[in-house]
Image 1 (cartoon, rainbow, N blue to C red):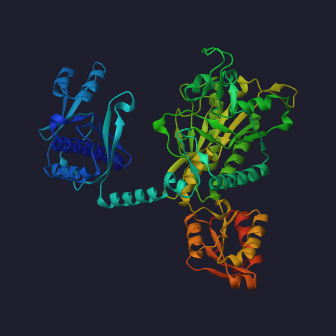
Image 2: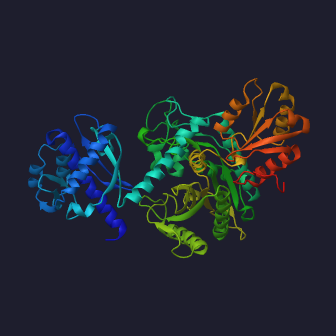
Image 3: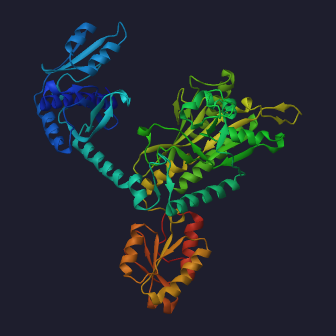
Length: 595
């Protein structure tokens, strides 16, 4: 076996050890054991138990697992008939259900660990428990889970366990987990007063003043870059009649994920049925279709930041990472076939610039025709060949991952997987080639030969969902954002009220420059003011006292630096903030040298 294959066997075998330990601790007659697969950093097992498993139980379970491992018991695989399996697992509700649903002729295999524990399993597993030693594992959590993920089924106790081949690897992973918890955007977002959620709008974030200021900073950066590349921004209705989604194909392929508004008659075929848009594509098609076009106009690039809504199951919602209402930096570019490659190369250049601005690396994945594809297969072959040529040119043949059958129903795509400060990957950007929607909407342009032809549409996003991207950035920067995108960039702290006049002069000058400033002019302790602004992770805190008023300077506390900058002339301060604002630097200027 290679390392990954062995790791899967190691973790899956340990899940059987966990099941055996729980049975020995709670008593065989009290335990219903369900399934126990391996996962990316360990494994889990689902149980029905007489009481919940609490954190105080973790050590007992871990010690029992180690005790079982030290017995160095043999593992025995047997193939049995359906009748034998049902008899063997009589009284085990979930095993019996699994066995009963196996197709006729299916090989049914079981694994004994020692003589007193047996599990229904395809395997493979170790031959003896000693192969698992020295085992490095730790219980992560115990939580509720529905049998087979269906909320209508029994509620079980799921025990998650971290598991790695060595103690060093486990320790490194636990360190990474602790760091991830400290960066968790669901914790930092409320702490920094960026966003909130309410049960009155599940999965639909409220952006608070600080968070909305940051959100708008991202949008301003995005708009300026796209204007330079020849994009035009549009906005379209958020709610549209069903007829639009029938033309686009979303009604057939995406209806279950749409928020639908019944028509006046309340019948399934009511002509007045409306839906909140889950995607911006059809509106861009209608915008293009409003007038005749010539080949001389192409490419036409329509980008937009309208709100979209996608219905999710409540259990799938996850902070900003999985929401039901969000803005996406969509673009729909209309091109001739001969313009495809040059246009997508420019899109990749924009992606490079945006991700580099945040210090984020990425890799590309190519997704091909899915089973529920729409349109002619020859057109699909043509589209896939075009994207492959682009990727081969940029990364070299084989320099990117291919996901067979994972394309959108209307065309193949390139997904951009970014990597954050913890090395985690996130799919954000996407570039999708579409020959289908222009056909559905009967889009045309007049070519140089006078003939009417169909344009090709390039769907693309770089941030993807801005909500999700901001969630990633919160964790990537641990809430300490670069100067240009910080909710407030400069905090002003007059030491006493007699310094307020000069402090207001400085704050007003910065605000006229477009810098986001907050100040505390209250008659209270200076350290109390500074502590709040530090908690909010403001990049610069300006402290103003007698000396600063007399010399018309400021003292600057730079986030993350112990030494304060003293006697900084106002002109120098203005050059410092202007440089960080305009150049979108990642680092804060911590010295006046050369400024």
